[in-house]
Image 1: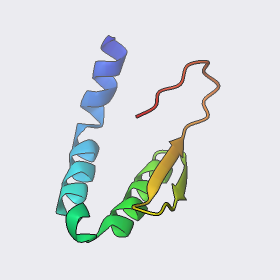
Image 2: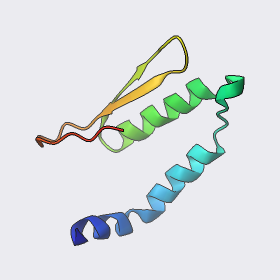
Image 3: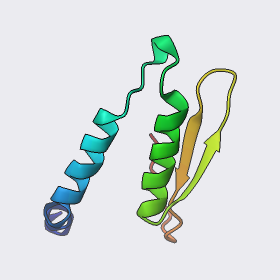
Length: 78
């Protein structure tokens, strides 16, 4: 676990910048405001860290699917 904590510590400033950018992005589902723009932003973040991102349009708001093919047998989904 120490390797994980060390990695997070080394990248802390980057993660804070991402979070700040997402928090600044207007996205109000009840007003259908900024939802597509925020989805596009999430796609960009996934690609920036080496993942494959796909936006899936629905009858409601878009869903962003991200995949990191690293050869591991386990999958994390959220």
